Image (cartoon, rainbow, N blue to C red; front, side):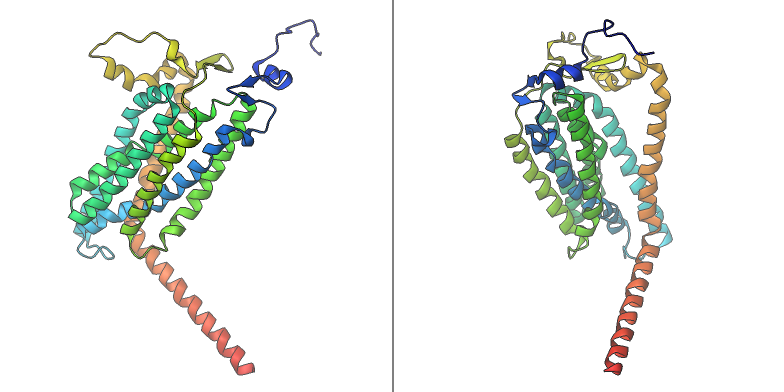
Length: 329
C-alpha cells in the first residue's frame, strides 16, 4: 500500500538539496559533482597511487640489499634475516599507523588540507628514509622510513580523501566523488609498478616518488579552500558531524593521548554490531599486508626466472618468425 501524501512531509536532506537547488559553500548542487571545486582533488589519488605502488617492490628490495651479499640470490641464512627484517618493519609500520588514526581524525576535522598534506609529508620522508638506508646501508634508517610510511598508508590516504569529499553538498555528489577517486587510485595501482620498471635502478624509484609527493603539496594548497562546512550527514540512525569544531574541548589531562588513540574505537562502543565487520576488515588487512611481502621475499627469484624464460621464449619465437618470413621472400 502506498503511503499517504499527508504523512511525513518533511523532505530528506537529499531531496531538499536536489529540488530546491540549495547552494552550499558557493557551489550549486545541481551542477555535476565533477565540475565542482572538490573535483580538483581527483588527480591526487591517481598521482599518490602511482608514487605509492612505484615504491612497493623496491621497499622490500631494500632489505634484501641490506642483508644479502647478492640480493638476486640470497642464501638461506641471509633470507631468514631478510624475511625477519621485513616482518618486523611491516609490523612496526602498521602499529604506528593504527595508533595515529585518532590524531589524524582530529587534524582532518580542523582542516582537511592539513591532514592530506601531513600524509604527503610522512610518505615523502618515508621514501627518503629508505633511500638513505640504502645509501648508508643502515637498517635503522630503513626502519625509520618504513615507520613514516606506516603513518601514511593507503588506508589513511582514503580516509583523508573521503573526509574532503564529504564537503560536497549532497550524498549523490559524495558518492560520485568517492567512486571516481577509487577508480583513479586503482588505475595508479596498475601503472605504478610498470613505470618503476623503466628506471635503471630501484633507488631512482624512491627519488622520483619523493619528488612526486612533494609536488602534490602545493597543488593541494592552491586548489582547495581551507576549513570544513558545519553540516551533518545522516546515515541510517547514526549521525556523524563533519566538522565538530563547535564541540567543547576536553580539559587537559594525562589521559588525552590515550583518549585520542582510542577515538576510532568509539564507533564499536556505540554500535556493537559493527564490531564483527571491523574485525573482519582488520584480519583481512593483516593477512593481506604480510602475504604480499612474503610473495616479494620468497617468490622473487622464481618470478625473475619465469620472466626471463618468457622473454627468451618470446625472442626465439620472433627470430623464428623473421627467419621464415625472409626464407619465403
